[in-house]
Image 1: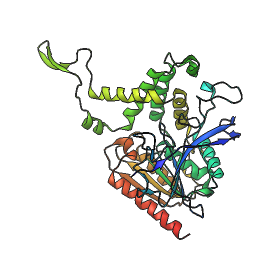
Image 2: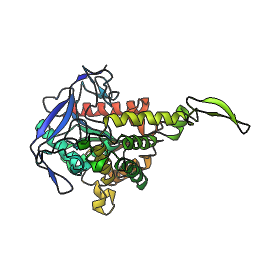
Image 3: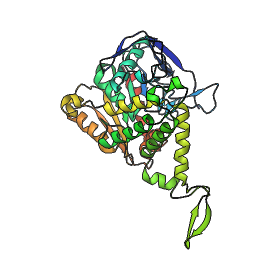
Image 4: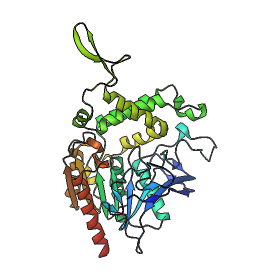
Length: 384
């Protein structure tokens, strides 16, 4: 059963220093909480979201049908992250388009919509903003910080920026940095957006238009990378949609009255159309750049062991066998660097057919693993 939840917002006069050297003031962060903070304020779990998700991690809104949080199968009463035991917090990242201050909001210094002038943000900036919100909630130490994909990068960064504030880190389907291929996918998606005639240099709000064509293509590119080849073949194969049988030059084949349309094409178009209705183009550019920039080893000459030396948390690292966007080898890089620093690490590579999206799904082995890990955290907390 899902929780009934409501979104909250917290205002910060600032300034928040950003990695770029800029600062942002007078900003708000949207967030939700689930469960009850215990008397010692020791059972808090921060869940960091991925690219197109938000602070709405779990539960449903009373006034909205089909409003389940994006990780509702993972978080809630009796679920692997049990809100009868833990106080779970979801925070919408700065620059997002789901309630926190972002490019579509007015810059208080000018009164004009930020648009393309919204400052560049990084994973480290998001962690600093999250820490400020936790400070306001009176939470000094997290029982755990948890995330998948880009959320996993934030969880990892928490253990480096605020090692004394994190007891456990759960990093799922993530990586210590993006590969060149991943950056390339992001760049192609960004080019689709910025070359859309309706983009208007990022100031499309002033023109009353949305670069939907670019957003559709960006989402289609991303969606291809989130699923495995085997899963796509199983779901769609080479099936054609709205087709009639015909014969050309003596060869039997299927064709539509307008154009040949495979079911996979229809699926991608549907998801692209849906995405373009709710996601902000400038936010997409900001978040994918933050993905590209994340690389804690850069400041250490590429030495990940040295980069992860400040971490004192215990870790659960999870990868999925068919995830080629954030391949298991990347998770093993994190594991090795932590072990080289003599840190406590549990690692699991789940043999699942779903590709990168597996971290959102209900694989029984995966769910059981996370449940067991958080039961251990709960028992640890009971003896503190």
